[in-house]
Length: 211
Picture 1 (cartoon, one colour):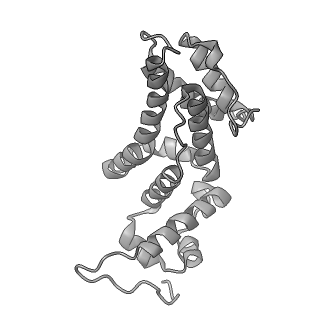
Picture 2 (cartoon, rainbow, N blue to C red):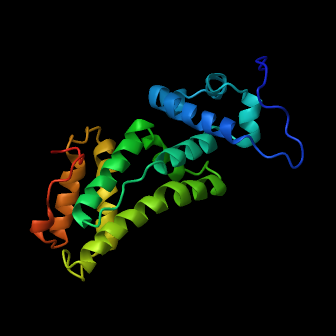
């Protein structure tokens, strides 16, 4: 039983949720997830650090998985890369953002959880809609812009190409290999070249993590 005084009074019908508590819990969850991993994450510790209570968390999120999915979605949607109009540098920047998000929150175990049988369809749908789909759409947009500019041939298989990009991170993780510091640029260059992309577009990009 949590004896900590609540900062979130019992909900009444029609009373809106306190957005400041939601934000505090999500950001605290990310810090604890990065420090302790999914297995070590404690809802009681998150609640105490966020200045609320465990019952308040359970009024908002059914379980730990649901909370972590929302927290990682929050991270993934904060400050997405600015589209410059140069497809290759934009692609590298998008992959750097992916790297930041999956590393900052130690979110890799979520992928395995979402593939398991114990996750509710609603949580899996949130994960797909809020984390996976926006990322894939932005990557496809980078590749599509390259086709429109004539930097990648029109017959390039963009569906498979997009899957190779982030998929390479998961492949390295499965064998326990640390992705290289310049992973974002290297995987973008490999896929770009495999698609028959114009090598003149492979220009350095500030902050791409490899130059």
